[in-house]
Image (cartoon, rainbow, N blue to C red; front, top):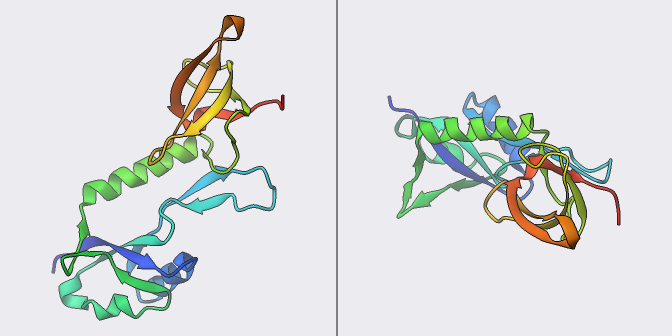
Length: 170
C-alpha cells in the first residue's frame, strides 16, 4: 500500500467544497491558504496559495482514479501522458514551510499595491526606508521597489512582498 501526494484540479471557485467532500470520504487533503493584506475591509483576508488546485494523499492503486474524478467540485487529477503525476513529500513539506513563512511575515500583498504607489519597507536591511512600488515579480512572493535615495535618485531593489506596506498617498 503506497500512498503518494497528487494534485487534484477543482472546478472554478470550488476548492473549499472539494476539500470538504474529500474529508467526508476520509481522504487526507492539503489546500494551502495564505493571509493577504487587502485594502477593502470586506475582501477575503485568506486566499488559496494555488487557486483551483489542492493536494490529496492517497493510494491510487487501492482507491482507483474514479474515486477522485467524480467527487463534487473535482475536475480530475493532474496527469502527464495519461499517468497521474505524484508530488514528492519533500515538496509538500517545502510548500507548508513557505506558507508558514508568508503568514509569519504578516501575509502577502495581493491586489493592494499599484505601480508608482509609495510604500514603506518595514523589515530587512532597508527597514524604515520609503520607496516606490514597481512590480510584483511573476511566479514569486517577491516585489521590486524603487528605493528613494538622495537627489531624487532611485535604486531598484527586490524584496519579499511581506517586507513592504502601503505608505502615505502622494
